[in-house]
Amino acid sequence: MTQGAHPTPARRTVLGAAGAAAVLGASTVLPAGTAHADEARGAAGRGAGHGHGYRSLPVPTVIAHRGASGYRPEHTLGSYRHALDLGAHVIEQDLVPTKDGHLVCRHENDITGTTDVADHPGFASRRTTKSVDGVALTGWFTEDFTLAELKTLRAKERIPGTRQENTLYDGRWTIPTFEEVLRWAEDEGRRRGREIWLHVETKHPTYFRSLGLGLEERLARLLRRYGRHRANSPVFLQSFEPGSIQRLAKLVDSPRVVLLSGAGSRPWDFVQAGDPRTVADLVTPAGLRWISSYAQGIGPTLDLVIPKDASGRLGTPTTLVRDAHAEGLILHPYTHRNENTFLPAEFRRGTDPNAYGDSFGALRRYLETGIDGIFSDNTDTALLAAADLTARG
Image 1 (cartoon, helix red, strand yellow):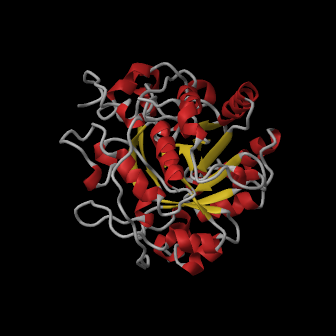
Image 2: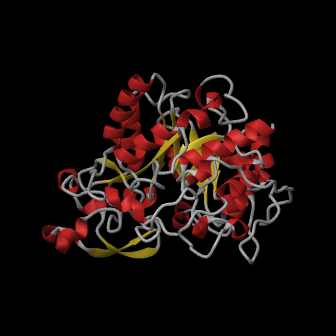
């Protein structure tokens, strides 16, 4: 059943009522509807954390991927707020710039699929084709709009075919600036009586620097303005480009995470600089030691933690968790989602790719590897899986 069909108890509520069958993991060498927030929050990790700053967060930490994007259009204040209501420990933002240098929250600078820009005749001439990190894209891009122009647009669901129910909220929210999110986090913190943690990604930093729209300096200024520039500040800074994290390390002391894509891929700043290293090189003990010299964690794709075989089923865990922990790095892998189309093959249920599968079963496999947190589109599901882990511990 797709999200647009008539809901049954097996949709979102049952996800909050049952766990999954046990599946055992091993290790090997890496090759070159929402649940009640109080129930999930009460036992959401192996521990409440230790010390100050990011080490005080529950483990595993549940990071709301672009907010509660399984239930609301991503990167909207509505999505962020719903994630907090569900009990998320940390809320993620992706940052891209406007033409006049403001940082706004969009997963990509191409806003064709996440806004109603195509419905604005006055912006028809802005549609263009660009090469972003070596990929040709045709659409509308944030760097071609002033902030005032972007604020005339409304956000919408990015994958309406998969998340038909989310289209109910199309047009409800504007694109937030990161400064608006910082103010929102302060307000929510006062209202809820706790720090609101953010996980902030610089998107395509080399590309934007080439346009004279460097992200890191703008981000650092905002972090300092709102007191999130210290080592114990409630914020993570993340990027797929190690150079961006190294640049941020010189500007602020906020904890930093290097994102890692597929083993055979190369960070775009490496490509531009002629650095031959791939992600497979970065997840070796030597590569992790290099990352630990300027960052506190890594955000690998889940496939780097447990690779899939040719049939799409989970194989044997790699030694990445052990090796990263040996270098003092935390791991925040990405991304867990409930729908069949996003789950490993053995956890899919039925033939509808948009229906929910055995999300708890998949989460159990991933969490049992000892990762420190996980990005999830479905905060409530991830929190309950973390609570299950604690109960078994």
